[in-house]
Length: 145
Image (cartoon, rainbow, N blue to C red):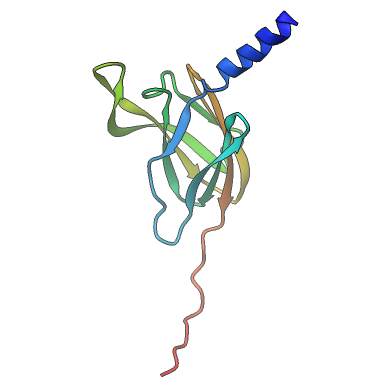
């Protein structure tokens, strides 16, 4: 019984330790770049990203300040490639220090779905990525006068 209570306490204390991700760029006109939280009972379970091909989407990682030891990987770089990035922003870190934002870029390479894994010293997050086809120019529209 005591072990069960300690296990529940450990799960409760560890539930809020994973970092939070934030969108830091917008999609170009006519394209898609949208990051959404997928929430469960304990808070954010993972993230969902819809991204057009050819779009580079910047995100930041925070856990009470910029994430420390940020790493990002893609299950399929042919669909969504990833890079660590310097976003040129400063965020509070600790009591009085400022540090550059811990950032990354996800690039939509080909239509499909994959997962991107974000890891920091405080924990990890998963992003389900859907890369969408770039819209094609349609036929000219006729306007009645």
